Length: 370
Ligand SMILES: Nc1ncnc2c1ncn2[C@@H]1O[C@H](COP(=O)(O)OP(=O)(O)OP(=O)(O)O)[C@@H](O)[C@H]1O
Image (cartoon, rainbow, N blue to C red; front, side, top):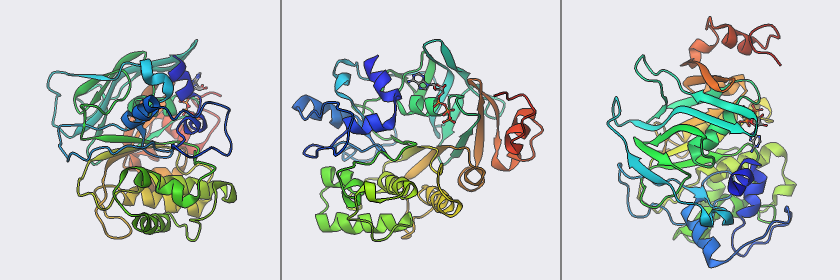
């Protein structure tokens, strides 16, 4: 319970726990900075892959195997006693192996607040499952407080559902994320807040995982960091501290950290990235940069340097119309704890659904009440 409340209380808190060994936080919440071997081992097991700083680990070096999974996440000290996830194979899925993640009738309450009340949706006319398939770019939209971030955290394995099931490539997940014995798919969550290490430079923040885990030289990492920063439209900021950046710049630095990969490692692992409001608070042009970046790192395409990218699928929680238009293909509309509409992005503006029409127009009249 402690773990869950810590996780759900915000990514800044997460980042405070996830201080790399040897680095002292310049600001913090007074929470302990634990460098014990046990803590290090836990960090090794759970890597928060994206905006929240990733702890040291060399995950997935044993080669890509499509039937195996690695899910990277942060492990807090209190996870010591937490039983690692067990995966049990379920019966055959109704259709092919391209389904990476599924949620079925997921419920989640916080105290008396019933947030998710059976999240599910029909895919085609066959399933009542929330599915993310290989190659998909999915958006989750809906009114504030309706549980969008919560479902992302559940998909990511940072929160356990009260009821319902999460399947990772057909394997039911019981509990939270562990990478042991489940390699082949990495799920990363890009938090709403930038969650950068205050005491590290931009270069150290962006290259953090590589400094800790890769065999790349410092020069190679520095070069890759510069290239990756250029991808998000940032130049000459490598030596700055986060406190010297604007909010939008911090967000882009965080995004750069989520997409940097070890270029010397030939292993290709599919990744699913979950972005929680990646363009919130950005000006329209910076939003476009980020939206295009999210598209460009998708496996279907190439990055700014013409290299194939590793992101198999991604999910974006957003309120921004531009992000809906530019960054995703399919939309799920979450309202009062359920998926009440799903469709392709181009159907969003033309949908006859009153709830979608109200949301798209921003009207005060309609089924959504504040
Ligand atoms: N750890 C928690 N403890 C208590 N309540 C929580 C916790 N996490 C989320 N909530 C509550 O659950 C509800 C849904 O939160 P969530 O962040 O998932 O909504 P959201 O749809 O992403 O909202 P927004 O669009 O405003 O970001 C909110 O009322 C929030 O206060």
